[in-house]
Image 1 (cartoon, one colour):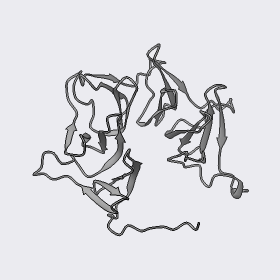
Image 2 (cartoon, one colour; image 1 turned 90 degrees about the vertical axis):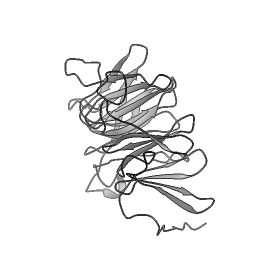
Image 3 (tube, one colour; image 1 turned 45 degrees about the vertical axis):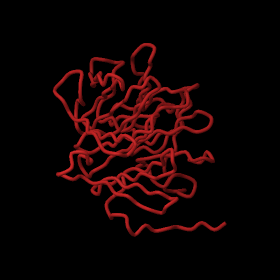
Image 4 (cartoon, helix red, strand yellow; image 1 turned 180 degrees about the vertical axis):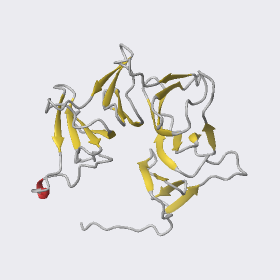
Length: 267
């Protein structure tokens, strides 16, 4: 069957930052300037959600970074400066914002990523660095911030992505602190950073995205240093970099900002 492309003329022209497919088969498009758009392929309709200053239940702002569906089929919408909005059964949006409280609210508004773990905790990453881990029942938070004197702490720089693998282990990608695995048993982070003297180490420390293949290998987008394939059993990283002398056999560019594994195990 020949592949065909359908153009959506009703879409805004702003940059699309994230696309997810929800549990009902609808597609959620996060945009850089035009809010949130939801496409229903069954009805071939697009619904747009934008900030409305006269509606307290509208999304907080129109610059959307990420969208995540939790196990209860609620949707968490991460905004550039507006913190996180929660929609329950798509009826309305409730905003979670920065708070001076040590245990309540968010530590910062500039949210970059959000993910729910198996213990019903919500992990929230920030552009300013660090993480909030929020108990979904009590909404009490625990904040983790980079500390150069804490070897087993959260990595340096922006938390750019949070990923849960098939064993429900939590992985963090940071701007300068490399790839991190959360060790739940000992409440610490195991960090993988580049070692110029070790060809089996990760290629770079700016981690933009993480995905997993059927064999349990992690594929990691390292901006400026290509793609890494990581075997958690051997702890070895295999590098995929551009080769300008033989570009037909390599990735086209080392400045990789995302990576995805499809249903056929293609990367």
